[in-house]
Image 1 (cartoon, rainbow, N blue to C red):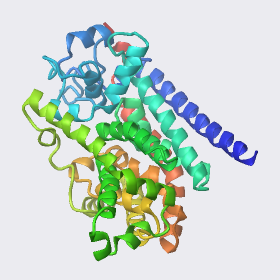
Image 2 (image 1 turned 180 degrees about the horizontal axis):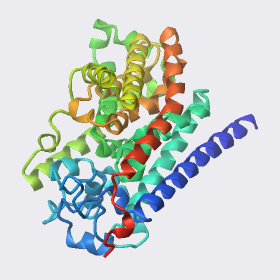
Image 3 (image 1 turned 90 degrees about the horizontal axis):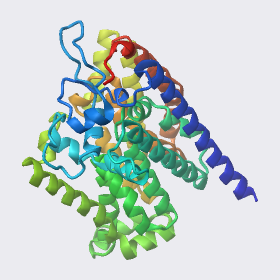
Amino acid sequence: MVHSKHLIKHICYALVIWVVSVFIQLQIIESQFCGNFYWATLSSSFFKQPIEVQKNAGPPFFQNKNSNGEIPVGWDGQFYYLVANNLYINPGYEIGLDAPAYRYQRIGLPITGNILSSLSKDGAVSPFTYWLSNQIVFLFGLLSLSLLFMQQKISVHWLWLWSFSVGAQSSLLHGLGDVAADSYFLIGLFFISKNRLKLSLVPLTLAILCREIYILFSFSLFFYWLISQTSFKRKFRFDSFFLKNADSHIVNELQKSGFIYLAPMALYILWYSYIKLRTGIYPSLAGPQNIIGPPLKTMLDKVLFSIEALKFDHIFASLIFSSIIFCLLTTAIKNRQKSLFFLTVLPVVILVSCLGTDAFDLYRDYLKGLLPALALAPFFLNSEGLTKKVLKLTLIISIFAQPTLYFMMSKREANTYPLCESLKTN
């Protein structure tokens, strides 16, 4: 009976957060984009629009030159919407894309939008269907995270941390796949917690296809299994390193079938190779080249630069980013022998700490990069020591600070947008 009450509480709490999030987004889309979901992707005529998209979605949001005499280039959501309408990289795929091979690498959300469109028999993926697919995946991610919190006796209030962060709301509003990646990962993590390892392969694969950072999680699980099958575990005492106080039923299952986590990596490599075959270039060579840098260096440089420039919102955002990452890294390293969880997510946190200069131009970009860490951070509160107290205080500050930063950013950017009433709609 008590378990049922807790279950209902956690499900309802997740539903309330989802409804509030959707309501806020719809209000912004109506007020800033005249209810046009294609415009909400910040689409731009700087890039040529495919004829099919012109018929289905209409003209882009940025149609005219700004005060600097330039047409704004918009943001990444417009590209992933185009990908959703040409999943198989058919001829003409490059029309409207800034870096086709790189954009096709992150096909997880476009696949979801395409599936939803097929179920509704819409034909081409409409801007609304694409937006809705992001919200649906987010809902299941919230439910999974809420139930994981219930399993680990973590307060359900921590759901606000991830769901109303700058990165989450920006991604959901503008059609990026970062929240979908986190959501698929959380769904996979929930299945693993229920000992449904094979079932977890589908969401974990989609997480990688949304954001390649999550290949590290599957690799960590596979690596754990590989070590557990070899004589090296005794020579280097991997038993105590990996198994001490870990969840026994999951560990036992991983020992028997951990090799299955090769599947998400293999599927990603196949898709990666297919992109190279169709476009003639490797995706990793087509995207930003300064997206990764030395651990902690770029974010510390950003903190110092923001202080020198007296950009108070950037100071606050960069301090939130750096303090959370620092606390998570130290906590994971200290507790690596206490739980398999810390070992498998540690590579993900390390990579987030390695964001390079291209990710630090705007705080919405690097706070978007922080999303995986925000989703995982409450689990680190089950650790011990001073770092836990510092982390908890930082996360509480972040819960209140990030929505404030988001609305400040949204209002400032809205002042640079064209009046949607003056734009052509067909």
